[in-house]
Image (cartoon, rainbow, N blue to C red):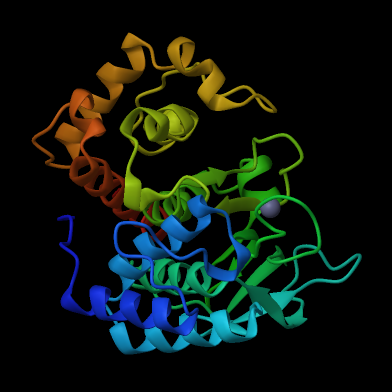
Length: 305
Ligand SMILES: [Zn+2]
């Protein structure tokens, strides 16, 4: 995926924001949107730059509304699919339609991510079940920039994180979805992460728009090892230990066996690269897409894949 250069609208948009906030700081200093830290404002501008090359009008409108009203965006669907909640005792069911709130930029990323997921062979789902998005607490959920995914229901398939990930009932499906999540969000904590056995948490704290290759690889080693083992029949054995931060185990986990398995897997999916090139964002993104395609292929045709 090529890095996009800032579109013309970006400067116009930024000038508009400055005026709106009666803030005439010249570039590169940026206005402190919505009382955010300067880091938050920088992130917002990064995202504007990225997303407005897709749909400038929509982004401008949503952000202007957010700044003006200083509120979270309410939503009931993601990429055209209803978002459901389950009540107590309903885990594993479709639950029912419920209201969610999220940061406006995060919501756009969420839409983009699920649009991409629906473009894979399983197609558009019928319901996405969440454990929570914005909620009154510290951290990324408190900023409306995190999503807890409990389940996805397609017409003929379903992914329930505890059953299919934690209990290993359908790891290919889980890994396919995780690969797409990782293409869109810098932080993804799956079912093996402590306290996460019934959902996948993802947020945009580690912003993929500012790709940090080693950090990204560090937090993804457990995922890669699981993918090599489950999807490519290259057992690497040393999978992420539940409850431990993968980046802290990076050097131990990213061993020669894993690197060799990655090289073999790349060959299998006709990617003329090696593990060493995973530090390039284009290769990283492409490899994740190939992993997702392989995973969904296995779900749809377990014998052939
Ligand atoms: Zn969460």
